[in-house]
Length: 194
Image (cartoon, rainbow, N blue to C red):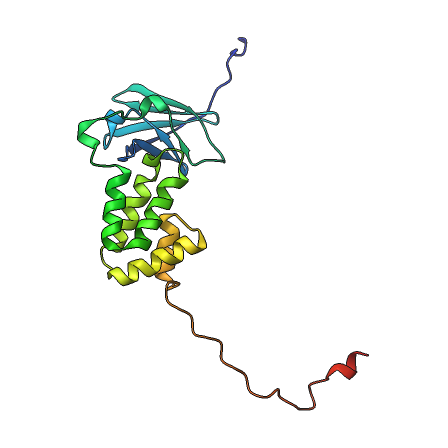
């Protein structure tokens, strides 16, 4: 019989992923950065209990400590673009301008989404989704949804979609005034409890 290996076997899951415009890939609900030059490229991800590795054409391009809680984005500052001409069009000012064209409440929602992240680029995906969602709506409806989202403090794409789906942006009907209290044998009154 031979000796056991000194290094424990480590189980790993491999998946294909596409790098988003915010230069992050999603693994098990968390987002991990890769070099910004790989935006929209297909990559392989290797997930172990402790690490997330990203490979492009068989070469490792990123490694992160795996996240199980806390912030949903893991960003290596070296992966962030400095002033890359091709992707300069995606910036907070552009999203704010598009939102401003719809109305002030939509602009406030987009600015809140961007301000909530440590790096504004991490909110780009959410902003794109929200603005795309609003394309099929009237400006008044988009404004009402945005106002509701900001008032309640829900700043995710799924939350905004839920507000739309459940029509939570519409004013609720005022409570109807009940008439006189009902009096019949089944109502006990205050004397019953003394």
